[in-house]
Image (tube, rainbow, N blue to C red):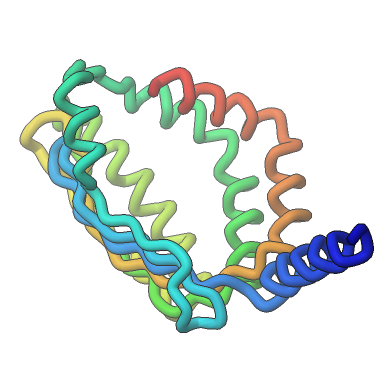
Length: 193
């Protein structure tokens, strides 16, 4: 009896290791306008077998949104100031991740605006500079942004399809998280939620 149980556990562990080596295909499509997000997330193994699908918003999300309708304004300037020292670290991380991940298609568009026209122009310039650095990293990477001068806005849409090999992502992720500026940025993002 114990031998059978150990064999089952061993088979499960080998299957998980096999999945980590073979890879997982993730497909995510979304549209964000205001506080409304619509989209679909699919996770496939062996590039064809669906193991997880989630549509946004789901019926459960609608019930929770009705209860918690508090609008919390995010301080975008604070997040940009926290992210500035991390740009080089994120660039190095993105290069290593793009070498590990097989990108089928990443197409995203950001609509960005702030209450001040000058701040919108300043920060859209920073976003365009980042996109000009990131877009040439891969031929199937198409990221774009446009300014919106109609108040504070962060909207967008995108189609993303990648194959991830999770076992190879561990080392670059640990290197990124070990940087002090990145940890401060993560804490700042979590505090804004």
